[in-house]
Structures are given as structure tokens and as C-alpha cells.
Image (cartoon, helix red, strand yellow):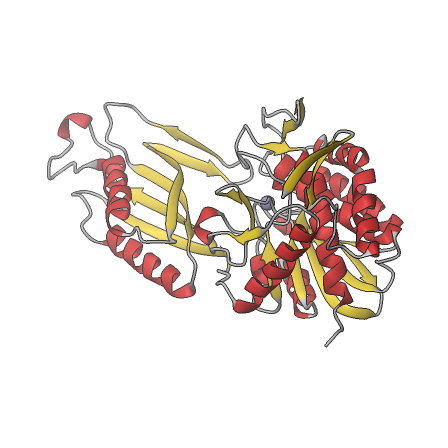
Length: 436
Ligand SMILES: [Zn+2]
């Protein structure tokens, strides 16, 4: 029933021998417009990836924003740069609006920053056949380009003219600025007036099927401080000298692992350091420690995260961790833990399921297969969670690749075209729906 056909360099599927049988004539023109731009879309991606835009590199984040801003200006969007207070040390955000006056209001979300800071040794852009390795290629400049190319295709057939579309590219998705209420104020007000929110974070495959997310777990953090008594190591384990900060840290982390784990909940110590003297530089995420093997450690610190699907689950985890930290301390030690929540949890909803149905239908109609709903434990947190309380949001409309946030982050180049076709059709169908 399905026949694979090769046309030029693009591979697509014919359904019962007729390409795009389920697409209207306008939709077929939208798909053609996306495909025509495929080489140019990759060039746009390369241009934006070749600029380092680690969250703590505001110049780089703004420079990437300028590239996307020019594209959106050309599509008739009203664009503006939203500055954050200087004390926040974040670049700010790029906002864009297209007021067509008809149909449902759609909010599109992307981010300009990456986890790769200036000092990163990861190459900015390294082409490897039909893949690219590089900083933020799939998280999420690939998704940003998918969004822009989808809009460009709609514009080219006149389908954008009457659409109500707002866009926010944040500059601090990977390390959200503080205070959070300020950093996400514009996003929340955009979410409140949107009927739908589509976020273009990386798209995951599960069991060979492409997926989208309707639920995402919270992201929060914790910092563990442990104190011991500095003394000669020969006295360790004695009542007078105690066990030191490092043994106590090991006890706490191991007890977390033994007692706090439950489904959909994770907590990961990402950085641990201890010794006689320790310090941590927030702006470079770098710890330093001084100590000697014959001295009992006085200080230890651990930075970790905490992810949960509902507020109740988060509260339960925090209470258990707090109890482990403040009771049963090894002799001569004490410990405290502090928690933060940066992303509120986004529980699954029926409206989210229906939105994925529309997305999946658009993908099937274009011959690109169905879209399943991704298990929320398989992905981290994202900006869409800030608007989830006010609108119907889905995430994962972006590019596909491997190893996001690692030195090996890469991108399957063909996923740009695939994502742009699906997104263009989805946005087209949503904005055709009559407004409230
Ligand atoms: Zn991301």
C-alpha cells in the first residue's frame, strides 16, 4: 500500500499511489513551498548555529535573535526585543506578533540560548553526511528554523494574511533568569490570550514513531550543604573528629536513591564537591575545592535537580529529602538543603490530546506518519509549562537528533523539512478554526 518514491534528493511516501491525497490544494502548495526552501532552511540554521549563544553569553543570544528577527520582519510580523533587568544577567527575549484578525490565536515558542557556553569545546557546526553535530542544532535552533520555515510557507501562499500568530523566542530557556515572574511575565501574558501554544523543542521518536508532548515534568533544583569538623584524618570515625562532610554527603545521596525514587520522579546530583575549602561560581557553573587526603573534609556541596509530574509529587519528594538531610547525620556532621522550582509541572489534559490528534492527522495527510503522545518521564522541562495553565499547549514540534545537552548533540537534517511541513499544516488548520 505504501510505496517509497525518490524525487531528487528528497524521499517521501506515496499513499495509494497518490501523493498528499488528504491535502487541499492550498495545503499542497504549502508543502511544496516548504520543500522548495529545504536547502535555504539548512543555510539559515547554519548561520544561527555558528554563533555561540550559551545562556550566559547575552551578546551571542541577541545576535541569534537578530537573525530570526530579520526573517520574521520580512514575513510581516511586528517584532520587538524585550530586555530583562541588568541584574538578571540574561539577554532578554525576541517577541513577534502577526494580527490577521481572524481565527484562533496561536502562540509559537522557541528559545535562542543553548547549554553550550562560550568556553565549550564542542564544535559550533560539524556536518556529518545527512546529520550535523553542533551547539544547539536540535535544542533548539533546528526547531526555531522549523517554525520560521513553516510561517514562510504559509506566507508564500497567502495563508498567513488573516492569521493571528504570536511568537516568543526566549533567551534564557536553559538557565532561566531570576526572578522567574519577571523572566516569564511576557510569556504568561501571551499564553493568556492564546487559544493554542505550540513549542518547537526537539521531537522524540518512541518505538520508531514520532511523538509530541502534552505533559512535561517540573524542573527544579536543590543545593545540599554539608559541614564536618576539620581534623587529622587519623581520627576519622572517632567520636571527637567525626566522619567529615564527604562521608555525610555520600550517606545523604545514597539514602535519596534508596528511599525517594518513585515513577515519574527523578532527581540528579549534577555537581558534587568537597574538601577543606570549597566555592562555586554561578556564572561559569564551575566549582573549586581545596583539600588534602590526610584532612577530614569540612565542607561539601551538591547541586542537583528535581523533576515531577504534579505539585503533590514534588511536595512529597521535597519532604522526604528534607527528612533525610536533617536526621540520622553521621557523628560530627550537619547538613541543610534548599529547593527551587523553575518550571511548574504540566499535567496531561484531554484538550492536549485533541491537539495532538489534529497534529497527527496533518502529518498523516502529508504522508509523514502518525504522531504519538510521549511519556512525560522521557523528557525534561520546557517553556511551554509556563503557559500550560492558560492555554492548550503541546511541545516537541521541533527537529530530531541525538544527545541534546551533550558534547555529541546532533541533528537529522531531514527532520527540518519534515517538521516544517507538519507545523505549517497544523498552524494552517488551527488558524482556520473560527475564533471564540
Ligand atoms: Zn530546549
